[in-house]
Image (tube, rainbow, N blue to C red):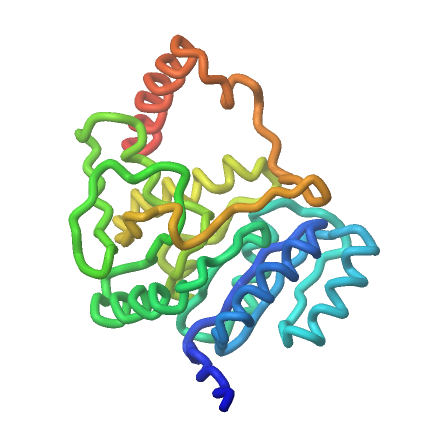
Length: 258
């Protein structure tokens, strides 16, 4: 006798996905959640002026996956895309995921852990599920989650990366404490300015220590990454890496202080 899986319900959480010209990736992400029988209180997809063929696909996907589509007539950048998407969220919590990420098969368990942590700790502003590197200063809490500890005098520039646009659960009241995302500038700068606000306003975040275990970032040949970075930022030359680290440490310290 076949049994029907019981959905994991998160009525207090809206899934917010930002999208730009990657409708296949979006479908893969939404199908992954559906395959795990994860049910959100709402789903909002915020599109940043995609090409007509992607908009047409989004309209069909909206029917299949029952999401609300928020659009703009032309590309306005990362800041505007997140702002207008977040404005459409009505639930107390927001799970923010960009369209090129896929959740692990046991993600529901970890999302439930993160949600319960935020419910029991009122001062936690967000729980992070993915990063390019492990945050260097962590205080273990439970279920693989640790508190991110920021002190300006701690060594290394990686201490500044407290906030990230990578997949995370946050309170929908996020803007009330940290302000809106800067618009009209490059995505990297938009992200760092929010990070700076998060630090200055003493934001508190939790970090999943297996930082690449819950999501996979997928950039296919058909739908490659839309984020472009300079060669200097990507270089692995030891001298450039050291110079970049020293520069970032001094620059970010100055920005936090002034």
